[in-house]
Length: 430
Image (cartoon, helix red, strand yellow):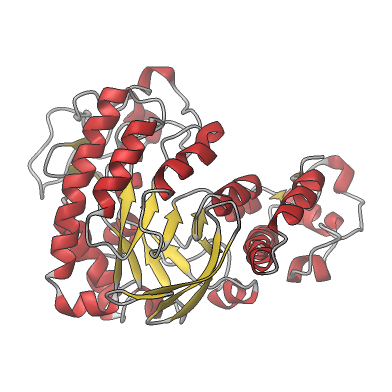
């Protein structure tokens, strides 16, 4: 089955019996993505600690960059002059850009918290969402757009004075975390920026909410996201040139509530999207149910992306319940702190037991790091605060996750997904 889209196509090669899972191929102007696939995050047009050649060498098929961060630095006009985010970062394969919605949320309801796409958030006094949709600016009354807001250089100071973003029906006004300047995102502006960034696949502007926000606020944010989705589609389709080279995905919201998730999926399914993203804001224990609620409704012939989730257990749950692509910062973020994935679970390479351990970081791994270095060397690098440690650990972690999803894809094609899932998780959870 081949379905043509504005600039990408999606072909389902194999469906998993008794589940929503499938293996397929997304074709983009910069190449094909064999799905299921894990997409490494290159927030600021760079996968942290790695060169593009290293990212390609681990088997990554695409990267995802961040609209909010690239808008602030260096600015979308510079990226556009460079030929788009792919050329700017010397990456020849497919690219994604998110809408900036999650980053704006992190400056608003999520500001000062330990953010996650799943589970609870840090401070109980900020777990109610944005109330009526308004959050405070740092300092006194919000200045006019285009001026400089009270400077925000110290996160503790900023946290103690309030949040850095406010939401209204039209969009979001936010304060730059870099220099305190004031900015405004509306759906049309987010699309305009993403057109300039030039990724193969981009996302409609949405409002991300806390997993523990009230149902009333989840509905309010979901309905606002639907209005913004329509405006995003309209802005994209009106740009004939961009429409011919970029695909647009809508983002399903609704928090942890089944009726809201289903309503959001039905609403977005009726819009002219090329694929769909599924936003977080639900509990980890509800992941499988939440994906079923949504993916039983979304068009089967279009690809689905799970935003910001990529732990090994979650990958199996996602694929089994109809997810085609994933992105997450966890592999490189963990790598920079010395936490490594292994077939027997995660290890902290800075632990004392590894100082004189000359075995491979993961005996079953074939990545560059495991082929050439011992745990003792990696432990030394982190203890000595050598930058190479973060690079080698990130290579390993990304290889582990990217190639785990490739193994899952093969298991679908060979009809042994269930065995791989049981065998892998049995060892990983020991």
